[in-house]
Amino acid sequence: MKGPDFRHIELGDVASTNIECMERARAGDPGGLWITAVRQTGGRARRGRNWVSEPGNLYSSLLLIDPAPLEALASLPMAVTVAVHDAIASVLPADAAEALRIKWPNDMLIAGRKTSGILIEAEQLADGRRAVVIGCGVNVAHFPEAGLYPATCLNDQGSAATPQDLFARLVVSMDHTLKVWDQGRGLPAIREAWIDRAQGIGDPVTVNLPERKIHGLFDGIDDEGRLMLAMPDGSRQMIASGDVFFS
Image 1: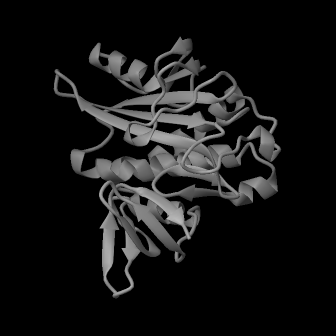
Image 2: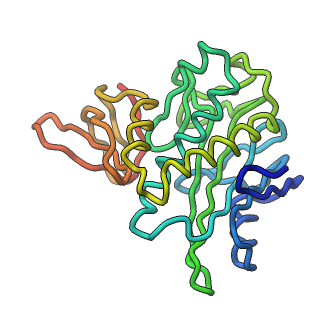
């Protein structure tokens, strides 16, 4: 399959589609490459957590080489998250699509239940290029029973889509959204789109950090995708990484 600006390699069992992409980058791949797999044997989520990766779900990664100046890369995850949201929404019935929301920083929830995760990794290559790998896993046919948050899958939400159907939509939505993002120049439109699709802005949240928990109101995100937390004393804290729980 060839998307608008991408190549695609479909694999069977792999340790991780992100690892496959990064290895090809180190070997000189020019980027613009999607890799999908039937099953991952060593899939990873944010903060080193494992990702259940049995056949029937979508396991995909996109390799980009030098996608933007370094200072603009902080906003790339926002664009990626909007693209994944829109791809998933396009294969859901109307009521489930309406209930599909982005949970900061980049999980997808349907009626409060997680259905997708995104893992973005970057590496400065030996030849001076910067490789960015966008990994996206979506629960299409099944989901893990245990985890930090309740989970669901697209089939249980009324979607008849296969992983291949969803991937075809993802290729198109990613191409479109990256063009809107435009190496960071289109950030205002992307940030607005992210906020429009977000779960819980204005609501009380608890953020679990490695050393403590903090409580406040979810006050949106800044231009680098950091969570803005309005504190009871009127101050505002910027959170770059943490696990968010809605009160």
